[in-house]
Structures are given as C-alpha cells and as structure tokens.
Image (cartoon, rainbow, N blue to C red):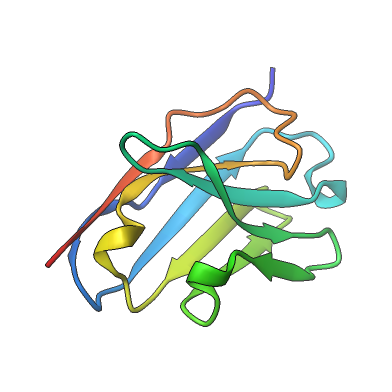
Length: 114
C-alpha cells in the first residue's frame, strides 16, 4: 500500500520560512501529478498547490508568490517551500495526488505565530 510521509513542519514567526517534504512509496511516482493540501482547525481540507509530471505548477490564490511546489522523481519526494508565512497559513499540511487517490498520511503541523 502506498505510504505518504510528510515532514518539515514546525513553529515559525510571521514572515518566516519552512520547507515541507513528502516522501512516498508510489511505484510510478514520476507519472503522477502530486499536490499539497492543508487543513486548519475547524475548516475543511484545502488544496494548496499542484505539480504535474512535467513540473507545471498551480497554486491557490492565497499562497501565490509565497509558496513553491517541486518534486524529485528519483527520491519519490514532493516539496513545498513556504516563504513569507502568515498566521492564516497555520494548518496541518498533507500531500496526495490532486484527486486524492492515495491513503492520507499523518500530515505535518505548521504553526505561524504573530
């Protein structure tokens, strides 16, 4: 069964940066589009960023210009570089495919303090 393991979260001040990683066991990873999601307390899970096998990217408006999604097919890993963090970015961050076909991992907590 495919495993998704997110890491890299933590507590950061407003304006700070974090780099999240998601290591997968997807057998044909290089052919899969991947995505980062987040879920803030009391809110629904939100799609934040996507990356295609050809490395085209897309972002929700609230993170455009601040977050960058990337992938390393050899390592079967997808990354999310988060800069200029805001309190509203506080959430548990998850990776999956854009259609969420894989079993969810445990996520990684990101807390932005003001």
